Length: 459
Image 1 (cartoon, rainbow, N blue to C red):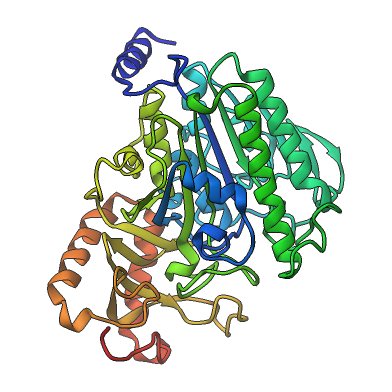
Image 2 (cartoon, one colour):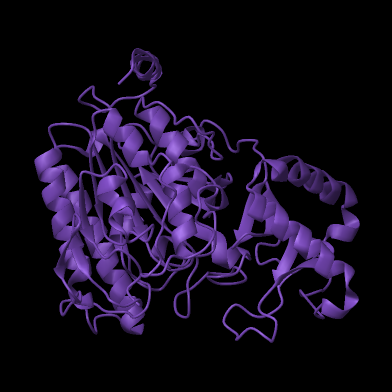
């Protein structure tokens, strides 16, 4: 470590606002589900019983406008661990087992940052940011790794410990329980120093599987079984923190990477995984830190997966990486010190294609794919076309994006477009090129599809 690095870290540490009850930097636990919908938890209106997550929300804060940075797996995880848009860090789409790369090696992960701060770090679960060894968690700031390196519907399906394959084909029904046991062991052995437990579950991504204890338990079928087992897992992690006297030293966060796929519920939101409608990008998000976050709060402020990195880094007194972050510090929202925080629009991409921008409660749709998310692409491929006219939705009054208000609010449309124009030049060349190609296709009437959205009376 250079003298400059030391002074930077020391300065940030001195400015750290909070510590746990023990006086040290807080432990960080982030539990991430795969394809869990906005409406899949009891506290968010589901009929699936989730008592442990409901209790977590009652003891902390529940967000109603927390968004992923992308509607699919790998990009969303890249945003979480870097605080930067996936299109900036080489993760515009989902990685496959045979892909030679992963999250750009020159990117700093949250684990890298906390490790320099003296944290013990582990990743338990689905990684999906690169299968070759240089891209695995143990080379990206994590001391340990246990899990499947990508989605459970991909083959082969190895279970790994660090960089070693310990099972050629992981038994899906045992995964949630095994992940949970690993997490409990990590908490027990790491309690003497600050730690970062990143727990990205395999489920409820399909194919679904539950242990014998939970299989057939839910009247809502296998999906309900899986979600109930995930809730049990959260309860076990919380119990481990309590057993080790760490509740007041630990910030616990829970969310999902994107909206639900074929099963699961987006609640009353439009769209699902793979779409940039709210059902594809809005997620449950719960945060608890006993003694620091007031209990029983609900925050309607806009927040993003991009915000986890800067928020945690500041709370832990860690230095920010040299590359600028796209997220913001949302601790004032968690604490209830502010109802909202002004920020640049959140941009929603599908691959390199810019499709939407959300600015506070307004969401501007600029582009949409020419086929449904799960349809076979036509001859010529699946393209993202600029809409004939931008569509504007007021998500506070119309969360399911049913009523286009662009014609009534041209000033809002123009303002968001101006903000986008100011942001895009700072993105990688493929993003700018994709946007130019969209505009060219729009200018050719023969390439445009017909209807893009619903219309109706204003709410």
